[in-house]
Image 1 (cartoon, rainbow, N blue to C red):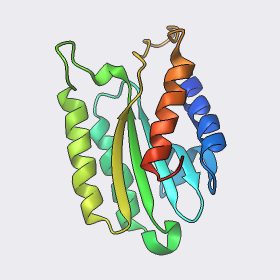
Image 2: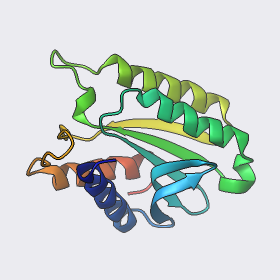
Image 3: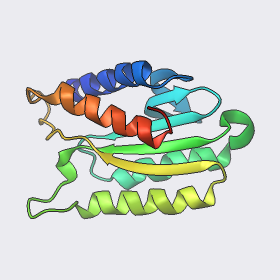
Image 4: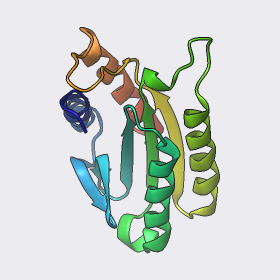
Length: 158
C-alpha cells in the first residue's frame, strides 16, 4: 500500500475509533492469515477493506470470507460485518461502476449469505486515488470522514 492509501487507512481507523463505541480499531488486523485494512474488534468484528487501485478487488473479498469460513466464526469473532470501501478508481466515466467493483460486490453479497454470522456492505470513498507518489486531493479528509459515517451505519453504530 502506498503512502497516500496508508494515510487514508490511518484516518479511517481514527475516525471509526471516535465514532463507533464498543470496538477497538486496528489497521492490518489479522483474520487467519489475511491482514484486514481496518478492523473494529469487540463482541463482534467489523472488517473494512480499502480498495484503492487493486486490479482484482473480488480477490480481497474471497480471501477474507475464505478465512472466515475456515475459522469457527461464532466462537472466534461472534459475527462479522465486511465492508468493502471502493475509491473512485472503480467508477466509470460514463456513470456507474466498473465490472471489477460489480464483481467484488456480487461475490461479497453471495458469500455473506453462506457464512453464518456474516454480512457484507460496499461503500464509495469519494477520492480519486493518486498514482504512487502523487498527492491526495485537498478534500480527502472530508471524504474519509464521510465514508467512516457510512461504515459506522453498516456496522450498526452511529
